[in-house]
Length: 317
Ligand code: G4F
Image (cartoon, rainbow, N blue to C red):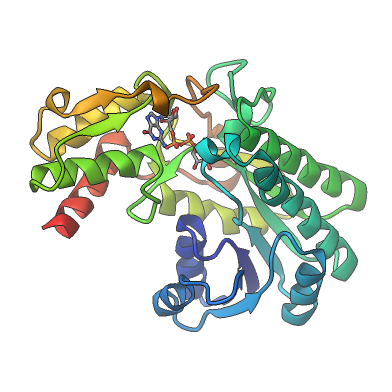
């Protein structure tokens, strides 16, 4: 199988590229920007990966890349993924995370409609949730420009599937973390701070909404599911989640305990870090993925947090 991954230098793209290469697939990664500083990193991580220049902002570049590479499957993991940033730059967010998916689908339709697509949808689409837990049929109610862009992208994938018969699927992924997660996300912000405080390099941690609840899983688990979607006879939509919901407060408490710290001594709430509108609770029901893909997450909340903090403690020391 020849696969093309957008977002290959991100957390998800890099895990998926490693996994596909290890399984003997021919892996191409779409890469953007002159002198991209992540180029050498991903080439070192995934021996044999081939990087091709293109951008989700540029329709002709996508068509050119698909015509040149002729992938059997495209995994669309390329997006601006930090929700907080989407209020500062809503138009950029919409261009990349929303319209970028339309451009990719158009490129597939024009170049070769037999190319299969697996697109990374997001639990942010559920926003102010209409039901608990959320499944593939739960109505969307997004709370951020990012969530709105993801809803547009999700509906566009479904629409191209129905209009043109594309084998285009969505992985409706709840939060998934790892040591490759950027420090702007709350899990890594907390694990890095716990490690830095435990080693005497930091003395305080400022956070926003401690009451927000998320369904946090282990990123490599989620990447295992994507090739299973591509290999299905029929395309579809599948929620990927653990079914366990925890608050940011519980995340902090657990992470600081792993580092041997009493969190209340160090953590301050800074109202400036609250979002204009937050998603208060997410909890996914992945029973469709379990039944149809035989997929199950392997890492629960406590183990996930321990892995992040242990990693960051090792690095700090
Ligand atoms: O870690 P977060 O920034 O992730 P968020 O907003 O849930 O989005 C992530 O998961 C989505 C899937 O549901 C993805 F689609 C998206 O791309 C991204 O990967 O924030 C989690 C929660 C929020 O409620 C936020 O308000 O943590 C709360 N929070 C509290 N203090 C904070 C902070 N978040 C961040 N980033 N930084 C804080 O200081």
